[in-house]
Length: 190
Ligand SMILES: [Mg+2]
Image (cartoon, rainbow, N blue to C red; front, side, top):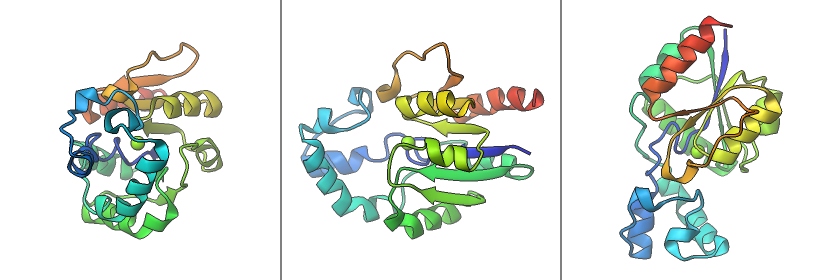
């Protein structure tokens, strides 16, 4: 049995889920390929405070129904048969019900859901003894792999295309099928 850890936004959801809301509110037509940094201040010409204020005021409706990334449901469901599924997200605990409902409505099985309200997931990953983690944030993937000594699948996005250091096991995948293939080989060696 493996205990899997998953990020939600940009990993279980599509990585462009927020863009329509941003374009609508800020009167922009930003395309995903232009989003080359994780934080959207560089495409919205906002300060982190301005963007954060708008985000907090609108997060509940935006978290209601983000699109799921292709393959995520089927592959997580398959792994859930013999393994444990933990979701660890930087979302705040105030959206726990919305997030839990979204997982249930999308029929994504899980054993544990933790919204830690910060991007620093290392403590949570260590505490729960997660054995492999799935992320879309470059620094998170590197730090989790390095500090927790586990492999981390990094779902490719325009905002995470920085080099991967040699001392970590971070595997860039372009879709869930690729992730499945890497994990199958890895599991066979466990
Ligand atoms: Mg994410």
